[in-house]
Image (cartoon, rainbow, N blue to C red; front, side, top):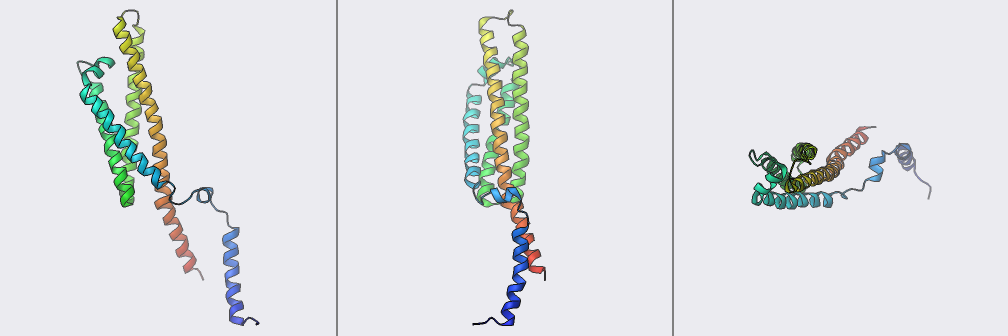
Length: 201
């Protein structure tokens, strides 16, 4: 049956809009990203932060004197206090991330990103301090006893392990930030584009 003039006008109105959408360049990160692919990773990151932070914090609390002896801060106990504070922040950030991911609170996610950035800077600072203090102790390696030399080696290894943890934590931060971007920012952009399409004649 031949189409009516009304059907022809409707099809004509739809063609330029669909053509403009198909010919328009699609952002690469929109095309590559699959919705919801980061949600499970974010929850896993939160659980790992809580688990690792709780275990290491327990070790610091139970072996604090030995830890300070290894880093040469037996009198001030500054290394055990600083490490305990950072691990407490890591554990708390993990709990916050789990709650934020389950409740999908955009503002709380921004708070987590701020807390995670502070924790990451603190971990890097602690690692650099550990490594630098161990290097200073190595300068006097000929003057110290074998036991002290072994403790200096352990302190250096501890600093390198802390720095490796900071690198891993940075990549987890990137994953969470991308989740925030595609979960909230991208959704807001798409809703804005849909409103513009509806309001356009």
